[in-house]
Image (cartoon, rainbow, N blue to C red):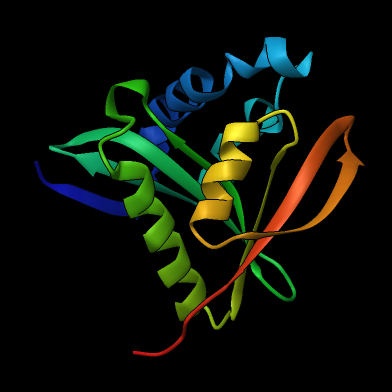
Amino acid sequence: MTSRIRPATRHDLAAVQEIVQAAYRHYVVRIGREPGPLLDDYAALIGEARVHVAERDGLVLGLVVLLPQDDAMLLDNIAVAPAAQGSGLGRLMLDRAERMAIEAGYDAIELYTNEAMTENIALYTRIGYSETRRVEEKGLRRVYMRKALDRSP
């Protein structure tokens, strides 16, 4: 299977929205409301060139949203279609996000997840992210995490 990550286009909007729904809808019961990624305007994010999609054999199966910040690249969202979960596609997208952050001149990448998404916190910790703070924003309890990026060749 051939995988590639590319900038999303307006033609990817339906696939992006479908993947986000499938990846986050089950958290509604746990959190008590829709998680942040279900509320985002993906048409606008695609128009701003903030979304990249992961394709495998021509099918869009994942996405990553990156937002430049002052001191770190913000990994705003990463989602993998349920059919592709466990296939390594998420890890491929995380690695690409880190490379894109380095290419943009950042020394760190930051993300946040809902504190109720404990499996996400554990995953990010295993791959080198450290918790930096917990805050309530937009009615959601978020855990911010940060990873220093290795800029060596």
